[in-house]
Amino acid sequence: MHFTFDNSYSQLPNSLFEPTLPTPVANPSLLLFNKGFAKEIGVEFNAEEADLIAQQLAGNKLINGSYPIAQAYAGHQFGHFAMLGDGRAILLGEIICPDKERLDLQLKGAGQTAFSRRGDGRATLRSMLREYLMSEVMNSYEIPTSRSLAVVTTGEPVYRENVHEGGVLTRIAASHIRVGTFEYVRHFEQTETLQTFTNYVIQRHYPELMQHPNPPLALLEAVMDKQIDLVVNWMRVGFIHGVMNTDNISIAGETFDFGPCAFMNSYRLGTVFSSIDTQGRYAYGNQPKILQWNLGCLAGALLPLIHSEEAEAIKLATEVVVAFKEKYEKKWFAMMATKLGIVEKELTDEIKELINDLLQWMELQKSDYTNTFLVLMNLLQEPSAIYESSEFIAWKERWLTALEENGIAYNEATAIMQKNNPVFIPRNHQVEAALDGITLEKDFTIWNKLLRAIIESREINEDTKWLLASPSEETEKSYRTFCGT
Image 1 (cartoon, rainbow, N blue to C red):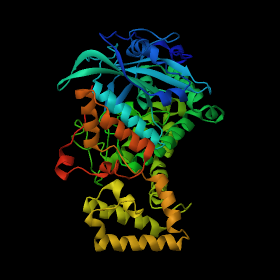
Image 2 (spheres, rainbow, N blue to C red):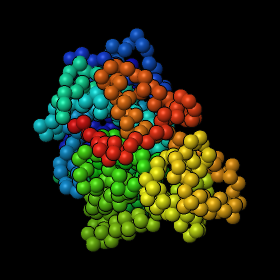
Image 3 (spheres, helix red, strand yellow):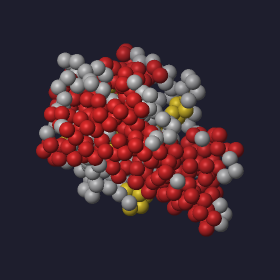
Image 4 (tube, one colour):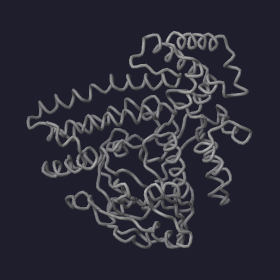
């Protein structure tokens, strides 16, 4: 397997990373290889090299041209600042794709680093499979995300709440630079290093900003705009990240770190699945508010570069972050309107009220978030009885009237809706069944059916209608996801 590496990150000041070799594993075996994605980035899969690929992607053998490092970063975790860093992930370098795109290639679960903080540096196979599945689903929804190239089993146990099989994920991302990376440089390095690092980030991800009168301030706004688009998309499909700490917020605007993430079944703003989010800080409905809080942390890290006078720097940065609410709400309403088949530059108060009334009804009735929009598109053959209620029928009549008043035919509306509403989501009980099949029986049947239906077919038929079933309310309440760290 051949990659063209450049390794520009390792040319930054040494304090931003630690050269770190992966720790070899006992018996690496290639479990999954994402052939379609590999082809996109210019990598051909040769089945005869499966053993060598397993050795390389487990970290037992280095890929030519790679320069393994563990990146330093900090971050606010559940609101508390901490020094962090790659504790179980090792960046092999940046690959240059045939189209000249630069992408990070990282091994997650590749062993201890200088930042492991008593951790074993390993990952459970189950958690790496979850990230592979979720990142592929997000990509299929056309939502910016890191991607998974491969999963390798290690032949070694990993000890968490139980004894698990070990796994290493090959993660590909635009970069692994986070809000928390800026926080690290701001708190632990000199302003000169912050300037060097910020210039690097701008040149790598936002080169057009180098001509801006105030590039650091422009960077703050650019990251905010990308992150707003990202979280609006999460809200569109009912995705709950689960651990929106600043070290999991990508400067490149990608969905990043799929630890305790999950998709919402019944619509409820307070939905939480993460076992460590006991206070609901990162609940579905809190994600926009937390994003603004995280962007405030980025603003604080950039202050010395925004202006030499602190008061003026704070004023300029505050103006950017305060604009978040209006920007987010405008994009969120526009997104929700497309879920109802409406595309307008300026939404009327009537349309906004229509959106809010539907969501209020959904929360009250605990209706399935995904399936409700399928009902409106007449795609469900046997919808729940709640859609026969007088309240829903009255709302639907208001919606149809709004379409007519806006000159939108029903078939035109449903065409828009089909582009903006997923037919299937990876429901929690189905994800667990797929992971059980692989980790307990080496059976990919449910896994393959799940991915094929979501990514490829997207059609409701006898083979896929099982994906529409929500779990029971009690199952939903008790379900928990785990980080796997």
